[in-house]
Image (cartoon, rainbow, N blue to C red; front, top):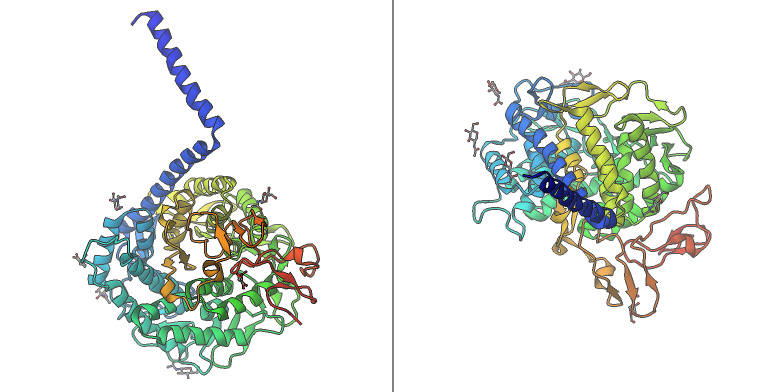
Amino acid sequence: MSNHHWRTWVLIIFVIFAAIFNLSQSDPDSHHFRKKILMKEKVRRMFYHAYDNYMKYAFPHDELKPLTKTFTDSLSELGNLRLEHLPQNYNGSALTLIESLSSLLILGNNTEFERGVSWLSENLSFDVDARVNLFECNIRVLGGLVSAHMLAIDSRNRFSQGTYKNELLILAEDLGRRLLPAFGTPTGLPYAWINLKYGVMANETTETSTSCSGSLILEMGALSRLTGDPQFEDAALRALRKLWSLRSSMNLLGTTVDVVSGKWIEYSSGIGAGVDSFYEYLVKAYILFGKEEYWRMFQSAYVAVQKYFRHGPWYHEADMRTGHATYWQLTSLQAFWPGLQVLVGDIAAANSSHREFVKVWERFGVLPERYLLDHQMLHPTEKYYPLRPELAESTFYLYQATKDPWYLEVGESITDSLNLYTKVDGGFASVRDVSTMVLEDHQHSFFLSETCKYLYLLYDDSFLVDQNYVFTTEGHPLPVLSAWQDRLPEVYTSANYTFIQRRASAMSLQICPAMTSSTSREVDEKHESACHICDTRRDHRCLTDEDCGVDATTCRRRSCSIAGFCGLWLYL
Ligand SMILES: *[C@@H]1O[C@H](CO)[C@@H](O)[C@H](O)[C@H]1NC(C)=O
Ligand SMILES: *[C@@H]1O[C@H](CO)[C@@H](O)[C@H](O)[C@H]1NC(C)=O
Ligand SMILES: *[C@@H]1O[C@H](CO)[C@@H](O)[C@H](O)[C@H]1NC(C)=O
Ligand SMILES: *[C@@H]1O[C@H](CO)[C@@H](O)[C@H](O)[C@H]1NC(C)=O
Ligand SMILES: *[C@@H]1O[C@H](CO)[C@@H](O)[C@H](O)[C@H]1NC(C)=O
Ligand SMILES: *[C@@H]1O[C@H](CO)[C@@H](O)[C@H](O)[C@H]1NC(C)=O
């Protein structure tokens, strides 16, 4: 090739690159589109690195130890801080496989899903002498099975025709029956621990937490609807109603309670550990089952949280009897709260809290388990980061609601930190101390069921098209079926609104779509609705109707009551 030709080619290539570069600069949509494809691929590789290593070194045991490339049969250790009553003869329940099933489908891997289902059908048994935590077993194992069952039978026929014979549901029902004896208490509040083979042990502790007794309704309710046996939903609902009846006059609950006497043990509570999913399940149960009762409980509970726990973008703990602040601590689990606020349409509050969590993530590289807000320092002992999903989860919800590309960058920074600090040859390892990034030999199953799933959905939400889901607190999707609804939210039945077409998403039931009212010319451009509790006054009360925004379920304007509360109802 002559020198001249060579130069021409360089010039042509340069022009092509310049054109591509220019396009990408001038077209932000195509820039985000490419970013999403790149990031989706990165997250997919993360998931498979975790999954393949689990299958290679740990399956059918419960979880992977990624540093030593071995396993741990951890189902009976979950929530068991002092590691009491560990089983002698228990070889695991393939926990991480169960937790991975719905993620495999979201990533489009139907063959691996089917392989997992047939292994479980043939080999999984719950007739094991293992004492497990009711809450953990419910959200991880029962939730994983029920969700995978619903996905296996859904109308899109993901499963090869005729090969699925409800095996997962049969397993779930067997497990559900083994959990029922826990509810046999004078109060109906369940024991926190149960032996899968022998039931509640003699001298079992009677202390349980608010989340343990108050967030069983999604899985148990779905199990009842699927099997036709009302016992599961009845037991979970009885426990939930009992717990709610124990609230204080300020609508606050404590963190732990005695299941025999029904007396509170720990009066201080917040929105983090021991309580978090209680709030989450009230609103998600309302979405899944359409029962007004759940929504009423949720609204009162939510107003109380915003009033007594919130301080600007932060949430502290308070004593349920007095409403006075107790602990000024940020916990990593609280990062789920902005995601929940998106579901009820309180986007502004969600956005401001989420930003603070992102700042803490950026400061440490990951989120420390506990951070002392009053001293602006790490908690002396809880410096770990066990690959928790909550920040990724909230980021996903906020992106769904706003489509603000900033959230894609947050997801990228989370993904990059996980790869930088926690990826090892044998999987992903928890961080023992965020100040040194020393690792711990444990890959929690929720890394596959939640962390990877929410990051993936941030960049590819095609799974959510044409179907509404609620995600359980363990990230397992349950389709929202009209047959399960007591009553469809008015927004879907009212003929007065014409909806500007928006894609169906996990959130479309709860975020008021952008809409025009055909009876007036008023156009509500925002797809934000509000359970918004204004923060302009210290007591978070409203002054005028303008402070109150739009109700998240009916999309009607809310009004400010004489006592200063927003609502569709009237407070005295
Ligand atoms: C667990 O594995 C050990 C060693 O393979 C075996 O002896 C034992 O019977 C197994 N236990 C159960 C409950 O299957
Ligand atoms: C599904 O997962 C298996 C196991 O990781 C892998 O070998 C296979 O390539 C995956 N298939 C697709 C379509 O991603
Ligand atoms: C059940 O487990 C056995 C022993 O590990 C294995 O050989 C068999 O293939 C498993 N069944 C299925 C359907 O995978
Ligand atoms: C239960 O606790 C009591 C008192 O601590 C003890 O005497 C009894 O042996 C325990 N029973 C069992 C079955 O562990
Ligand atoms: C979130 O907060 C940032 C910073 O205050 C602001 O720029 C952005 O518009 C907010 N987004 C939403 C959806 O409220
Ligand atoms: C819809 O219109 C009817 C009749 O015009 C009216 O009675 C009803 O209250 C309206 N519903 C809503 C949600 O505005």
